[in-house]
Image 1 (cartoon, rainbow, N blue to C red):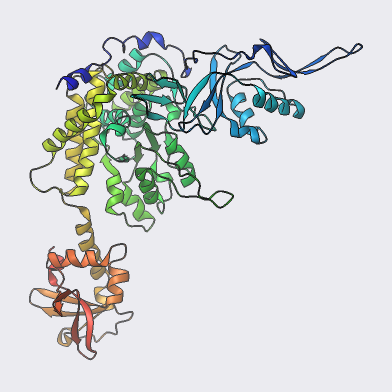
Image 2 (tube, helix red, strand yellow):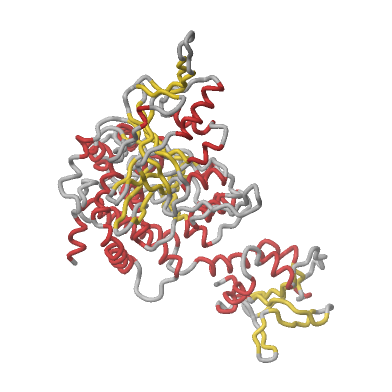
Length: 609
């Protein structure tokens, strides 16, 4: 277990230094590659000085040369390409008028457009650009012509990348870890969600310390750390939804989690198109995607979105030529909030939640049950609202440091992480689930909570959270136990849902769509319209003879018919038959006045199952 011991403190002493090293607010600063461009001498038709880049119109004996301002000065510090030596680009660096450095990896493919995206990115970073059409065209020409011998390696996603024998963790403006060459994120549009402000010590005091002792706050923070461990865990993507009434404190949990990576703008909202959420997910690979206010999304599509985010892939689309585009893909955890759970919200749109959807997005009751909303303890504050305001204010002042500290700790031990994480997860699952056969759905959810707990303990042992050892583990175990209690057991939910669907259909239509075969009990001699089947009195109640087409397309809507039949038969709720040595669920019965017909016979036990 030497490797485990070394993981506990892989960056001893270095975390505390972060508070003094990164005081200023703004985007994460990025170190320059070792080799610099020699472009200061300019190229044909252009002159470069500290005042900017100028288009040169040669003069003659009577007319002096003309210098037209094109844009502020920038450097091309490296040519960049992906692992297959494709997707070439150029790394541009410049200073804004406040003296702050900016960096953008510009895809060379953008030089074959009208240049709008290029100018937009440069201008957003504070670079002055001329407005005249010919000077804008000159900027595109200059970008095409300028080159450097320095090289860098580009990756298309944030998060973990293995280059050679080592791992690096890539953020939009920074790469953590060592490799043989400079590594940068290479996308058409840079993300400005990952920002840095305040100090690391300030974050630990004003955010993490106030989350201590509060199970839901710890769950939120640890979910953020866990998103950075998916690569080593073997788990698929998935999410948690903090569910509860307004003013419970759900947004505070999201704000605390967002502060690991950036400021208040790091969190997004469910109110977006599916295409937009695809791009958003792709930009949060190996980090936490935060989606606030589930109630803002159409209940008819929320289940499909949950599937998409957890499955890690967007839709397959075709290009202009008809060939298949590369799908957007990602690996992440997402943290959501909403007044309703996923199944309830889908029901508002007339949709039925599938068990797979509820496993991929797990509803966690936001109320901790102590009469304080999200909180278990108030840390001396007079009310939960005051503590909420303090955590959110702290997250706004101090953010973006924890992701750097945790990534540095993980990079130092990346070769040992996978075995350690899986070992600790197995111990968590063994502790939380009863012995014996555990159905797959509960086991999958338990593994996600296990990863979250392991992440919290790793962050604590790396001197990031400031919590006591074991605090994260206990808080996450409590959240899982309470989720399991609300769920009602460890069995898969589909069998219960299937039986309930049959029971619900009969209860809803028994008096109107079932013809009573016991005439002595049917004194009203009512006419059955849109008949679903027949019922007849037997010992212990009624049995229901349901027409095959109704059973398949109405009773079993949303389920596999054969699976429903198997569940019902095993529970004694469906009477199967034997024909030619094979079990058949649709059996022949003689119906009074109808003759023999094939029906599904649902027994009276359906009300007890």
